[in-house]
Length: 359
Ligand code: FA5
Image 1 (cartoon, rainbow, N blue to C red):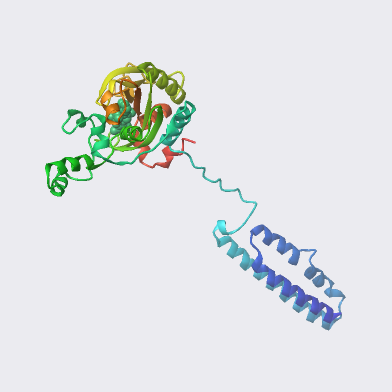
Image 2 (cartoon, protein in one colour):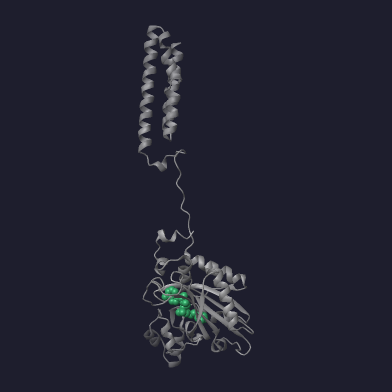
């Protein structure tokens, strides 16, 4: 009897002490304590039956059982302390409340760009892209803005090469003129892609060009030095200003909302004739002027017009046979109007408190 019980105590000892290190949570530890030390545990029943043993065995078995009881208790207390001091993530406790994963959100400008693509591709336009580092030729000359033209002042340009460097490279005046055409800059608008596409294709052409543009601007609530534009170009036989107006109104009501009010204002761009700008009425003051629209009552969204015959000729088209319309819109400004925030710089500050609202 005695040796049986001693053997059993040794087995319980091996089992219990080996297992304490595998306990991973406090609730597991509680179950373990009940299993090995509880009222119904084998060790407790050995201790209870001691009184039935002869004196000598009782002492021997009792000592071994009590020692084991204390050992298990100590091992469990030790494990409990180490579990409590562990960082909670390392302790898999399925009863703890979960951590909600952060859900990403698309940037507000991205959302507007996506809606442009959706609306215009549904009308048969194709999405194309062009280089952000452009030449003087595509950004200005081919768009009917020759060197020295006052309209160049409309776009404060980041040049990547100084005029002196070009002069130094060129030996003759011919080479100098060529160098100036190829002078590299950061594109100030997406309009150069109009020329690049027309050079390579024949009408009919229906494209939109989303992309980043750069201007040496003083930044303020509605001006950023790097911002997005979406260019649109449609060239075919018999295209008129009515097509331009109908297309823009249809698209902008879908993008900004049926209830928004727009106006076409005569304007000037060297590469379109006639030219217009499209504004959306300020929803806060309904056109009377407030702080949000800086007293103007309206916010400019885009420039547009009928492609200038000089531009068509430059790419080898016959302006007597084909005509076209073009527009260049500012999706950052459109995002401001759609989502109702008043400072364009919020789009480029990477403040998650702002950006995570646009899910
Ligand atoms: C142009 O850039 C012309 N290329 C647009 C065009 C294309 C006209 C085709 C005719 C035919 P503009 O400089 O006005 O035009 O800019 C167009 C739009 O870009 C503006 O209406 C405005 O929405 C946006 N925009 C202009 N400057 C900034 C700026 N600094 N920050 C944010 N958005 C701007």
